[in-house]
Image (cartoon, rainbow, N blue to C red):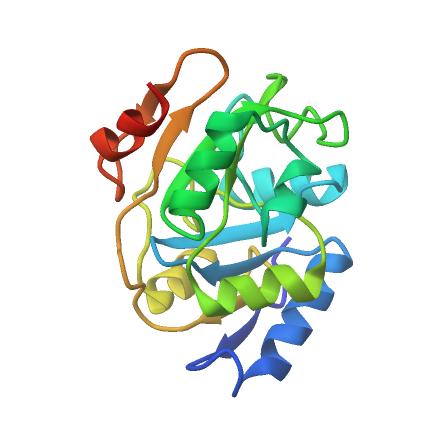
Length: 211
């Protein structure tokens, strides 16, 4: 069943605040919103709402055995969904907001569907004004995989997201091209520090802080 997708052209977070407020309301009600981060576009859903997460998996044709990362606005929000040790707090302070995802033990508040049954969750704070305003206005942590169909490449231009996800999601914020255009680096701190994916932050900058 196709959804009636609303597309919002947003050039500036403050100037276009009304559009972001509408999208925040959609997320609060359990809907799906695609929006830019500094790396690539993400597809957001309330990470604490199982029904919303189910819709996210379906919209992407993503197998539920693949865990989702969670985006938050700040450290207090992050600590409500994941357990932080001193290493994690150091990386958070050094690189957040920014293109780094930190995998940590999850809190019980995070549904198992988000983490594909794992006891860990990836946490990130995006360095993008639109994404940050959306997180703050929605007031919920957002499950946020890349805004593309499963098996296809990540998208860094809003017009490409519209072509790919129109009719599959409730809203798309099209803000043109992202500033970084490549995925975040993923580091696991569930045990010894380990780089799981090389991305925008060089691994050596991470490991020299936590090794």
